Image 1: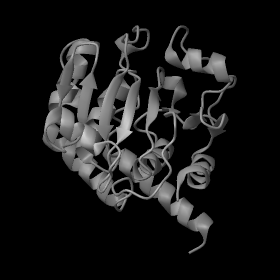
Image 2 (image 1 turned 180 degrees about the vertical axis):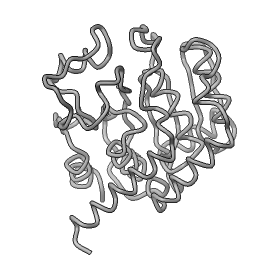
Image 3 (image 1 turned 90 degrees about the vertical axis):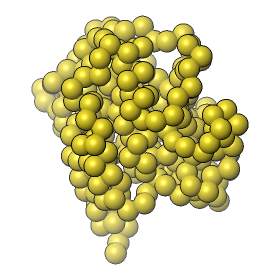
Image 4 (image 1 turned 30 degrees about the vertical axis):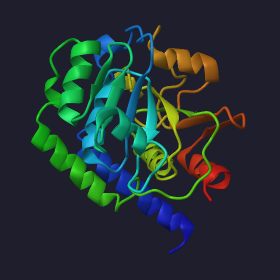
Length: 258
């Protein structure tokens, strides 16, 4: 199979996984659009291919929370020992909130904590129903055929990378999978959609020009970079700034895979 055809099938599979997620993590909660960020970034230890980890990331995306992500794929050795040392077991997701001194296992416990602490209180209906969510997320992981689950050899970066994305994007998923496999830590800047006019791919939306919600995270990103397209990666180790999932994947392979 040619590389272009393989890539096309990979994108289709990622779209199907997004559909099974029923759009969770696509739209920011109304109260989160202008909410001030926590004083310190939260920390999440997870792996992309885990359906339980996906539930935690969906809530983080909906609440527009930036988070330090420490990928813990199966066979990984960089961050899994930290989780065992702090929490006593290698179970994921594992969330650490330095603002409150809270450390949590269990995806639904984490989701409830996030909405209670940084949202309006109760978990929104769309983010409830653990069984339904996990079935959809598990099927999504099955479609992805093990991507974002097992470790691959890589060079560790001196500084974490920075990635702008939102959970439900199929293109962002491809980058998350590779970052997990290569055990590359990164700061996740969640920029979920803030208005209905933002639905659709950034390059295909009409009418132009793009007008973000004033005072929101997307407006700040647009002002800083001149675009509102994700995934977007910045690597402080090399000074690279990259758009487009295929370009980011190629960069990660060339720079960090061994």
